[in-house]
Amino acid sequence: MTKPLLNRPNAVRVFAPIFFGVCLLVVWEIVFRVIDVPIYLVPKPSDIAIALYSNAHTLWQSLLMTMKITLLAFLMAIAIGVLVSFLFVQSRVIEACFMPYAILFQVTPVVAIAPLIIIWISNTTLALVVCAMLVAIFPILTNTTLGLRSVNPGLLNLFRINKASRWQILMKLRVPNALPYFFSGLRISCGLALIGAVVAEFVAGTGGTSAGLAYQILQAGFQLNLPLMFAALFLITCAGLLLYILMSMLSNAFLKKWHESEMV
Image (spheres, rainbow, N blue to C red):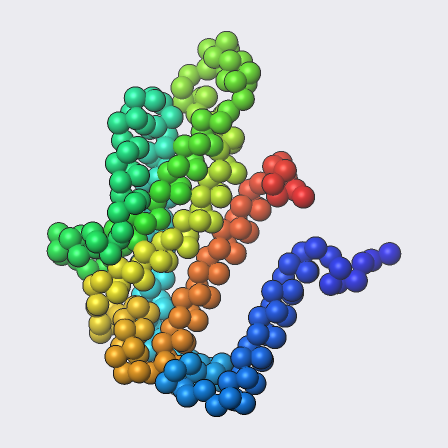
């Protein structure tokens, strides 16, 4: 007998947070109408919806710009992070030499180094991409390196006994073993790339056709237009959630048939 829809684990995972979110919005709207909170302090969901509709074109263009920077930074972080991980796994000495500098970039606030990058790189878009990439690269680098190193010693000895080359060991043993770690890094890194893009936009303060959502938030703050500010924040949140869902779907597509993390 088929189970009711809401009793299925996947359906519960989808509909439970949606239902909870809708309930929060309804409570927010009703409470703030009853106590008559001024719109310049905290807007109601209906005020945010009106701002989204009335500024749809501007917000859409800004969202596209922010997502362009985010995706470029994310792809750059993947490419560089994976290549450096392959290099690290070949030699402990190389990892010992360069990993402290990777950690240095990670613990340095992007707000502190973004002005320097924007000065050094004349192309504003490229400067913003580099800033966001520096925020996003560390989870991919560390997770992939950990996965490449976490191979079964018995399998590694078996490959060596059969005179497998470094390339064969890397591609046929280490890379498949590292995939769950890699996709875990992607889920973390996609959100960090978006955060890095928004922070870099705040620092750059770019306007006009290259204005991202951060610029819209700044402008709304200067004008005390809180509905517009919340609308831009809402779009950033939705973009981050969408990226995370896409990375989770990608992980599931690659791992569901053989790795226990996606089979349960």
